[in-house]
Length: 590
Image 1 (spheres, rainbow, N blue to C red):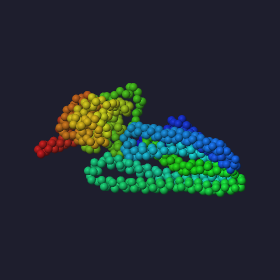
Image 2 (image 1 turned 180 degrees about the vertical axis):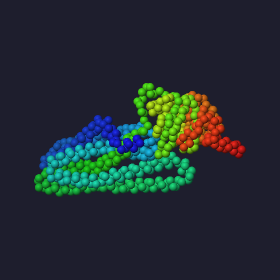
Image 3 (image 1 turned 120 degrees about the vertical axis):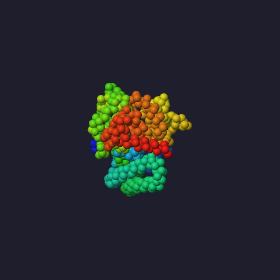
Image 4 (image 1 turned 45 degrees about the vertical axis):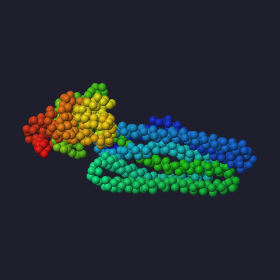
């Protein structure tokens, strides 16, 4: 599949591409770092000259004041460049974080059913939050501290070698020890960080599913069991974090210890040279100042490399989203003649669909005439929903073709095709927004006249008028504040409001009482005469007015005809009609 293939091949998305778009800011930031560090390493020269003059004696107060002013001016300049470099580089991290999050979201909206069938929502959320934060730190602090550390090492060691080669070699000897320590720990850090992020994704996914299904959890009274499982997931996460911390913790103390050893050695060697008259007091003080200047770069080296490992690991996880390719995409350029609305007969030409190794549809030969209302029924799992998904290219057939007006649906740009197909699913997904905006969701902009008309057709307007804020009523997540029937009628309204050329109602009357259904059917009559309509239902009352009805069983069409024709021949439809007539009679008698 497309997603699997995208993981195997080399990534098309590189973090460097985002940095290239901000080359000027990066250059200015590194320049500010350079000047900040350069001025910082020049300050000890002022200290050296001041100390040597004081040791020699005879120095005037004006000279001391001059040294003090020079020291203060240099410190202010270094601090000014320091503020500038932080503003440039740390804000760069936030800018790139925004751009990556924007691109991830846009890319996720283009991915199809095949991608989302393999992905967990919690894992996607973790990549867009925790992993993206690690990338931001890597870009902002990584460039800042990386440039500051490398430039500081080069300048400080250059001057230290110029002051005293023997003492500089002592400090330089500690670097291989530091590198070996990093080499031993970083591979472990990377592996444990990956494990930690994976576990955090599991927790996020479990939380998302629990909150979405909270009514089911409370309905079964299993809150304690869910809480216990959540506690176990968190305990595992804490264990992984502690394992990661045990590897990261030695970095700072080890660097501090190595630095302290260096200070002791320099005090011993440099002190003896000062006593022997081989080194001035000012030069010794200057060298010691460089030791303290190098203290932060040496400590920051471990932190910077840790940021590097976390950032690169998180970026690889983010790349798995950006590199995923949709299997369903535009086959031809969206030229002017290609953007005409899909109108005409819908033809399923020997369509076969395999899903998960199971044949969902097999040898479907079907023509739905333009303006016809087709009813579809059949047992659960017979392929009714996936059949209509093929029209809007939500999935692709394994074999065969689907044509509209004699053209393969793959020849239409996806946005054009789906703009003229209105689908009302059985399980309507409603957003945490106003009722009016949910109905107008498929429109370019909210048109209240279309919203009102669609709500009237779906028999939703009487319910809305009883709400305190009417159409401005804010719905809870997934429309939890509405009943099942109200959610289905909202889905019908949303599909009708688009004024689609092809209207698909997928079992949208299952949670609606029969009287309300009859009212909706009466209003839908005028709507359906203007367009091609497909109604999927397990209720005969929803299908009897269709121009033609087909029965799907095990992915094959086993019956087709009008309601009168089908009830006169043995088979699934007549059995369904008899059962529902009996149920209606029993309800009336009771």
